[in-house]
Image (cartoon, rainbow, N blue to C red; front, side, top):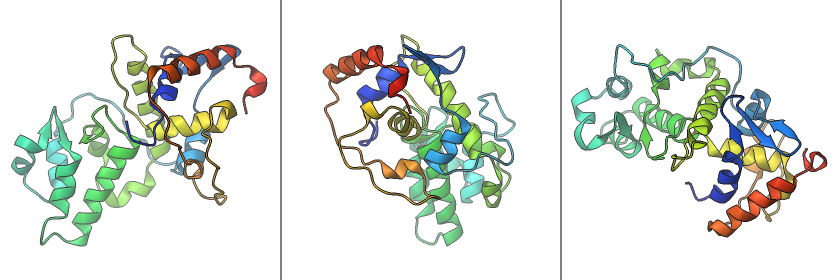
Length: 235
């Protein structure tokens, strides 16, 4: 996980996730991340055109789509640049920053990497693998899409996968989940001072994560605290 993600805290909540209802089962009832949470925490739009989070086959491959957007040959993205049907983010950034590439290509690579690494992260945390880009005809249209709803749907699915007993990791926007926990459950907030943010700034930027141990003892402690949690402690 990324350095700012508190793995034991995330794991404790994932254990409470019920895929059938897309909610966390808590001692006093159920709670879940809502669309307005996504908008407030991440500052991304929840209105606009729909994006598909489906993993079904498309007429064109993800690798060919990345090649189209970066204006490079599909063959140049295969081999060492391709991992389990996805493209390494480092390869995308390398292609778009190569000598002679124009600013449009550089912005395209940065945008693709940001979309994948921040909103639709897979377990590798270093590979562009989601099929979201296949829905985009032109990157100029990015502001017209409902990124919040797509991010939330993708995150619900990743929580469902991670909640299975055989799972050994989690994808999705963990920044969203961790900030949501901080916003609604004060007892789990970090010890650092919260920063002030403006009314139009994402709430996630107000939290400064203080590095903590990631050993199992903290996971056990979080489990016990969740067992004692009352409705009065929730915002």
